[in-house]
Structures are given as structure tokens and as C-alpha cells.
Image (cartoon, rainbow, N blue to C red; front, side, top):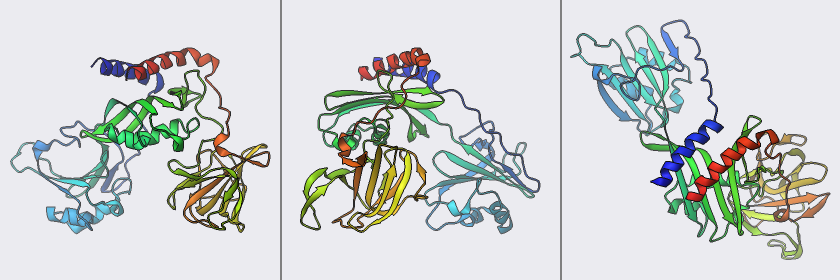
Length: 417
């Protein structure tokens, strides 16, 4: 209980320091005519949709397979003419092509017993996803619609554990959201090679999770993180600098560096850097100046750093479809055996760190789907796993005091777990 109280208090402090308020977008004006469109609004709520249920008779249901909008409305006395007018509403309100099986809907018919306050229109509510819904008012001479969102509850959560097999499996074992593994791999992508996570490594993380109707709709943001790997402590402390929220270590150095540790999010190394390796197809020994990452066909491949696409094509000597990116005058990287290229990837295009430049495949000389990743320094191949990339800008001097406050609270929270 003491830990949770401290986490809650610390989370409130951090939220005030890190996340300034955002202004809501201005709602568009109503178009003329009988169809009234309201993109966003708010009304006094008697239920989660802002409807006074006591004035209506309510029928609830879920969309069944192959049902369309007319199938949902006709049983409630809505005419085909009215359904047609509903279909004219903008897709941002109701898109018939996105009526999904399993989604919830409700139909509100005015209650005949409510003589003095009886509504004159029926209401149709369709839940687009766990958070968003649309309320369509069906009157005798007009149709109006309103987008809305259910109330969101933000909870301060924490997770900690010791890794036995993988970070993902550890999250599942501790009953934490396994997507935390993805979040942590993003934060520490420049510091930790997650393909080299070992048994006995540890982690702690404090985060905010969003709930709607007591059901989790995902992780909101990471408040702080710690990983113990290779006998080393790695701290992830969030701070907003130059208008961008990113993570720093306990010394104020940015966790973001010039190059990612790996071009794939999760996979396994199937073959390492070698000056003499038995080729699995040719059955001869020859240098393998790269690292092979085994992954399913179609797995996204990310550029490890900013740069320009220097070459793109098919390598007849065995590399298959490949992309080479020149990062600067010293470093370049090559990605081979791709099944296809990322959108817009062509020679001369500038790409940013983390952009998808292709997808794992088995083109060229390959026994199965994998990525052959190569790293070059001044034109010579180097082992990608041993490249030490310099960090980007640390905490600015004028921000050291503010950062120090956040660092103290964050590290104290994590040490208590």
C-alpha cells in the first residue's frame, strides 16, 4: 500500500511536470440541409453516450457476420429513405464499409409512458471501437449525428520481474500487458540488443494504462523504466526537451543514439559476423560480413539510422533484393534478402531512423526467410553487434535542475518496486 501511494503521488507530480495541457480542436460548423453533422461535442450525460436512458426503451446488440447498416436499423422501424439519408453522413461519423462484426450497437425508442418529456426522435448508437462511438438522431424530417468518446480512466501501474526465457514471456508471467515489452524495446533500442537478453536479466517499469468500461485499451505512456542486463543498470527517465518527449539515463545522456542496435524489433540471430563461414546453400567456406536475423517473411525491416538510400536493387551474387543506406561520410548499412521494399523507397530518398525500408524475405541465396544485415565503416565491413554509436544531445544545461527533480522521483519509484 505504501508503494502504491508513493507511485500515485509521484505519478501526479511527473504528469504535471512532463505533460502540458493540449487544446481541443475546434469543431467544424454544421452543413446546411436536413442532415445535421456534429463531428465533436459534449452533452450532459446520463449514461456513457450522453443519453438520458429513462426517456427511452433500449435494445442492445452486437453486429453479426455480414450484417450491414440496414440490417441493424430496419428491425426498429427505420425506413429505407431514412437509412439512405444516414448513409449520406460523412465517413468520419458513420462509414458503412467499416461496420465490423462484434461491435456493439444500441437503439433508443422514445418511451410512450413519458408523456411530458417524451423525446420526438429515436437514437441509434454504434460503437466504432472500445473508445469511440457515434449517436445518430433519427427524426421525422431530419437526421443528426454526433461523435463521442467514452470516459477514459487512467491508472498508474507497475511491473517488475526476472527474465527466464524472454521479456515478452516474463510480462505474461507477471500478468502485465505484454505490449510493455515492445515499449521497453523502443525506449532502450539504442542501448540494449534485445536479441541478446539473458536469463537472469531484470526489469522494472512504472506506466500509465488507459481503461474504458474497466477494460484496458492500452498503455498510455511510460513513467520510468529500469533494466539490469550484462551486469549493467540501464535507466529510462522521460523528459521533454525542445518540445519533444524522450528518454535519458541517470547522467542526463539521451538514450537515443545515432544507430539502433538492430534493424528488427523481435527476432533471433541465426548467423553472426565471420571471416570464414560455411555457406548454407553453396556449401563452401567464405566470409560472412554481416549478421543474419531469422524472422518470418514480411517482418518489417527498419533503418538503424538517418540517411539516404544509396542503392536499391537485386544482387545477383546472392543477396537478392537489397537496400543500402549511406548515413554519413563514415557509415553505411545494407539490408539483404528482402521480400519487398518499403513504401517510397528508391535511390536518393532520405529516410529517418526507424523507417520501414523493406520486409524480410528469402530472395537470392537463402535457405529460409531472414535478414542479412551489414554495417560498413569507411567502406570496410565491421561487426554490427560491436558498433558503439554516439548519443544525441544530452540534457541542456538550462534544463538540468528540472531534469534532476524528475530523475530523483523516477528513480525513487523504480527502486521501491
